[in-house]
Length: 119
Image (cartoon, rainbow, N blue to C red; front, side, top):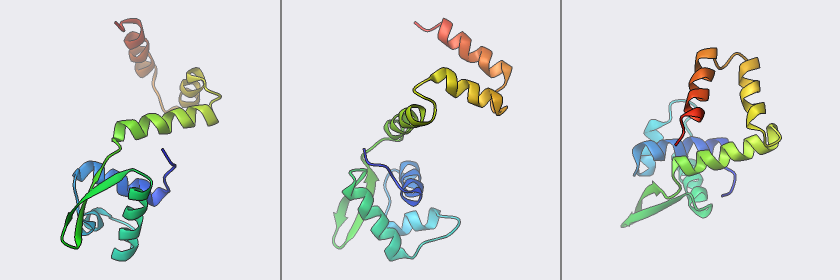
């Protein structure tokens, strides 16, 4: 899986949400910094080249849909982030969020409970 640019990732989130969409549908979902229609079309074609989306053709119009699931992308993204930023240590990930006060003691207890009761 190739790395996505921020704009490509934004478009993928829209396609995951809509499941199938024409360029105009994706454009309608972008709230800030709307690209020109042709620019967005190029971004989506790059996503196709990278193997993230495919399309159904209706004459000269294409309806795009994701072929990489959000879950598969999230798994790849998280594994890469943990490898590069946390030395492949999930303990370091949890410690980071605890130090940044992004995770509560109650949430940590829930995580421990999930681990202990895993079957």
